[in-house]
Amino acid sequence: MSYPVRLSLIVLFVLILVSACAPAPTPAPTAAPPTAAPKPTEATKPTSAPVATTAPTAAPKPTEVSKVGGVLTSPANDPDTLDLHQTSNPDSYVVFGLIYETLVTEAPDGSYVGLLAESYDISADNKTITFKLRKDVKYTDGSPFNAEAVKFTFERLLRVGAKSPIQSTIKNIEAMETPDEFTFKMTMKSPYAPIFHDLATSYAGILSPAAVKAANDNIGRAAIGTGPYTLKSWQTGQLIVLERNANYKNPLKHFDNKGAPYIQERRFKIIPEYATQLAALEAGEIDYLGLQSQDVAKYTKDARFKAFDSLTTGLTYLGFDTKKPPFDNPKVRQALAYAVNKNEIIQVVFENTLAKATCCPLPPSIQGYDEKLKQFELAYDPEKSKKALDDLGYKVGANKMRTTPDGKPFQPAIYTTTSNTHGKVSTLLQAQFQAVGVDMQVKQMESGALLALTPKAEHDLYLNGYSWNEPDMFSLFLSCERVQASNRVLYCNQDLEKLIVAGRTTLDQTKRMQIYADAQKITMQEAPWQPLYMTVSKIVVSAKFQGIKTDRTGGLLWHDAYFAK
Image (cartoon, rainbow, N blue to C red; front, side, top):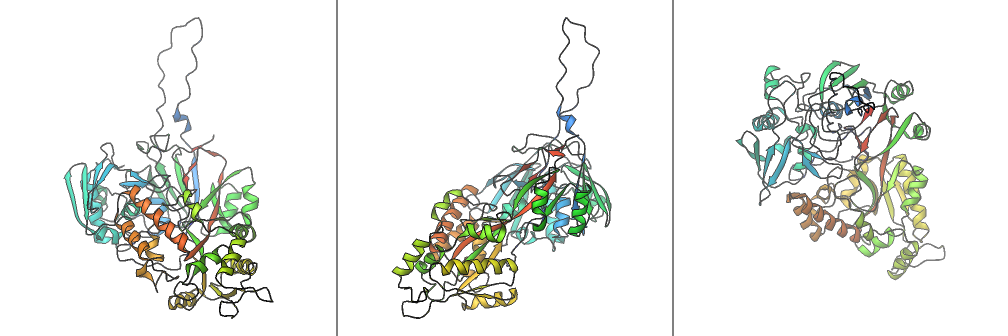
């Protein structure tokens, strides 16, 4: 179990799922499973009655065991299987993510820390990772966790995991070794930094070899792991019930509870339709729900619930065709970027609720976001936009609209999809551009036609977005290799290209994040994109649950959560 639960989020703008030269990171599933939860202290056993004293003995403080109990019920679609090597279904992921654990997990700050591994080392050539495994872990079938189990798992994934979204990553491993019972070493064919992202997804959960053998390799309904919950029952099309693993130990520092989860049962009620889910929430049959926009105002003000913001991994941007004059000139791109009022977009189109303005190519939901980079943002400044356009020779005519330096009307066109939201955003951008004298035209077309058009460098501006949950998004959407493919602004910068390669091959996460900070600086200054906003999901949770924590994206963390009796 590796990811905190993210309810009814991602993915908003997946228009392209492409493969880069090295294995591509796995997109985050629609809902990720909660991180493991810890074990409460044991109840104090009564002893013989104490000898009377002049003052009564103080009552013992209630122990953490008093928090144990309760049921958390979620709406869900029926999983296809709980064999984590035989699916990419996000509904399956949510369930088996509570049963299986991974070598590493993503901490709330976005760093990768040990889960089943107590530590890991990276070789100087960035090709070999050596994991030192925990010695205090057992599977819920009683079998031991060790290096052979890790090796067995990845060998099985290679053998039967064609449907797994991380098989291509595991195929990049050319050697797996077990020097001793609690050491696992993997050596990659070539350095691939996003491997930690993939190893932290529950698709990389470590199996019990004994359980797989006992099930004759048919573990779709016989999931056995080391995680905080065990599979209790599964009624197809109706209900899945997971039961608390009372022996679970949690090593993660960001949780107070270091043992089994407090919540006794996790139930997944099969309710595919949103209207039925909403009725179930109203009736108290489920305990949380990702809201649609029309229900946000009502339920976020309802005292029966607590509301949480959950951020999508990606953003919407205004792109410029950097191969087509005059947008091949970064000064023109910068001048137009200054005309964009992001806050007005959030207020008018999203009612200050379902989106947040973004400064940078990596939004806060993706590792590598750095608030300090905001200083490089080409923030809204219409006067600066006007002056820059004046200096570039785009003069205002009698109709208050500008002409190009050679005297022709300056009427760039923005191309976008037929999405209602994109239509509203484009219309607002059109008004913002007109305010600085640029008569921008809006052209909406079906997504397929838009994706076919953009590689030809026949557009001027481009309103769309990307959804990816790894900073390696640069290699997909802004690299020279992807021009005329998924790089739809056709931007190629050799300094950025060097950083993209370094980011994909540097496994040291601190160094890697600095590389992506430098990459963002170049992109923000050169302005092939003007980042606009990231969408936000509104989650409401029954107020009966206390102690819920969130990660940097708003993902719900249930390790310390308990049912208020």
